[in-house]
Image 1 (cartoon, helix red, strand yellow):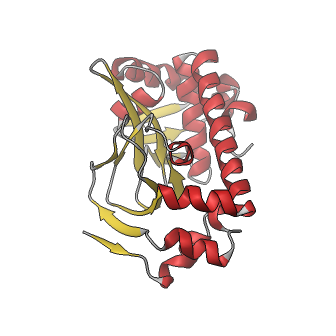
Image 2 (cartoon, helix red, strand yellow; image 1 turned 60 degrees about the vertical axis):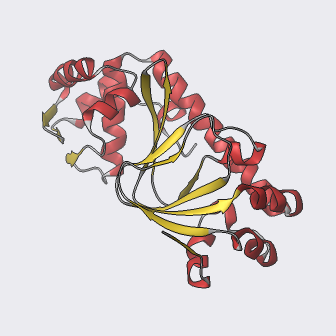
Length: 236
């Protein structure tokens, strides 16, 4: 079941960089046909190859972007609040190049793609924000490509764990935010290779107990991983 947006939802959406500078009149126009819906885990929100009918904003929960071909499937990214996906298809009025599904109970706002394109044509600040967001997505894609092309599987896992440690405020112990099968796919590995990679990182102070990660020597792990902001910092 979905419900229309109320004005009490507006401030939350205004906090998304994409909408922060849109003129009030155009902002209301964007949201007049929008609605919010709560989805349970493992619900497919969009299917690659389908036309983009809505721009999605994730308010709570998490969403996996993935793709399939010839009976194979790969994880591409995990999206968390508050952010949009898949913007390029909406702007181009094109087919989705990826599918998306909820990983947990998630609250999603859906804005009709035709309204997004109409306001894009008329509101300079919104158009500039969209270009900025698309540029950010492009740069993130380049960094992911460099990570896969330039690093061994062990180096990819080491840098992923360092990014997760930063996400968890530098704690030495934290839980993986993905099940290991999805993590392997995200890092371009098989589950068997991921298991071997975890064992290989024991020499650099990484201990694994189920989904619990302990980094006992960050300096050793950093020395091996050689993190690079031009690959690992998605804010640059």
